[in-house]
Image 1 (spheres, rainbow, N blue to C red):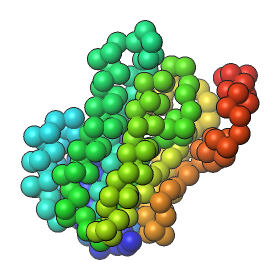
Image 2: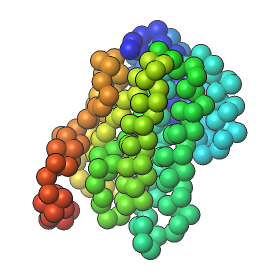
Image 3: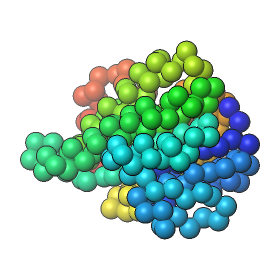
Image 4: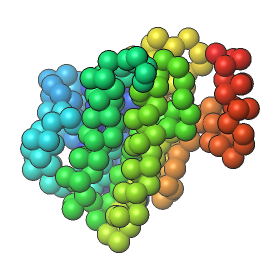
Length: 233
């Protein structure tokens, strides 16, 4: 999968990882980059094609698919973090997490899949796809659903030779993680890991040591992992 010369759409491209994806794609020689956001006017990177898109709105997705029929690589980056708990949190916020991370991502894939034969999809996931953390449990549940949806979509699109890659990270140094005081990985590092994985044809990209550690822990007793997590949190 070659970034150079490709036509690529990035969701949530107005800030954070999405903005870095957009810039890095241009730097790698992408022929055309559709940079999407709820307000196209918030896209301020020269050389891209701004496109209005709300991934929680089916009509908005359909309009974007019509406006960008030449896309060969889809980067599903748009996300939210409400910080609500599952047991006592506002159910509307929990639904917003799922509507964005699971349903929004899936609906984007369904809309663009016909034109991605021989192309690729990169889903920005999270190390929280594999564990829970009090204060981010709704986010973790939504990312866990998005992770296994990524696996399922990969199988379903294999016949049309569409590469489906999942990108995993801990906390990135972006506005979304501003509340978090722990170590953060630079957006450039995260984006490079994802784009390198696409170009290498890999199914997963682990952007940092934290993601690698969490994934490795899945084969062990979960009591050991959560004991360590509670001790260090």
